[in-house]
Image (cartoon, rainbow over the protein chains, first blue to last red):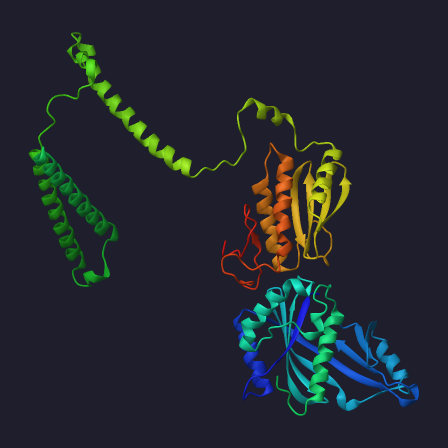
Length: 207
Length: 295
């Protein structure tokens, strides 16, 4: 598990599938090999009013860690992360009286997964309750575990195939954690950040 | 004198022309029939061509002979000081001695010239693979063996290197008493498993922290595979039979420079990535980072 950077990508006057095609052509021209599919999904539950102060639980699954369910509890001021095994989904169903899910907010990013050298690149199409919202590009550099050490390297890689629209600063979530060892939950935090942005945006989100 | 040199030059030129034309004869013979000879009567065409070439060679040979005939031989015999009197020896079997002496004189003169040139070239490219010196003080050291040393000596060496680098952690492990296997963690960048044979580094494997400590499986990441290869090169480069401790120390010093593996750009091209790898080579002397292709 290495450092992962998640970024949104959009091209002028291009639809989602066209953008994905442009990107996959670029990455294959650089020597990438396609390695199957991936899927990250997020479902959000909110506490019922009887429980007092409202809390939100985001439950996320990542096909990279198929046996794990990630959940982030947001009480307005602080986010508590929890990584559990698959039974957590059943537990959430049992708790449906306290936490209700808003079905229309189910967000997911899915698409193809590429391997290029020690990098993994995932080109995901984001849908919120099956409405297309945008493109999320995930780049993982596997050998390195500290974001501060390899940020410049990742930036160079991102610029290599995203061009000028590549991010110049680390994702906001990572900025305070640059010196810490990167874990899969950090990827989940980044996904949630982007999903929240996509949900808030009306129609198609532009960067 | 002026005329002599001019004639000599003319003769040399004639020889040059002869040589080049002889060469073209052989070239044409070795190529045999070519496509530009066409289909009809190609053999006769080829023979005509050869004939033409041979005529030019013949003419050139005549030129050379003329030029040589024009040359005036050097006046008087080659003089070698007093030994010239050898030629006035009365006994017949010794009269030839002087000629042989002149020949051997010329021969030694040439040897001297060539050896001077060779000496210059070799001095410019010194390739001392061993630190072998023949002074008496150093010779005493050769008696120490680097395969068969007391475990304490190695232990001391490892702990002294451990103290040298605060950001490197050493974890020794001794499955076989005199030959430790140490695990070297370089910050949070990578780890290496190093097997010793006495005081000699025998095997190095570089891996990511999350990977197993097995000595025999290589890393699953390309960057660490590359560094493993480079470590093998370095272990041979730094190996010195006479100063084994120094060899281990300098290897560790070089290896420590990988602490900036992901953060330092290549010294030559200034980029981080080249064929999707960070600069995996460190210069042996300056310890500067380079890509494999840039070094």
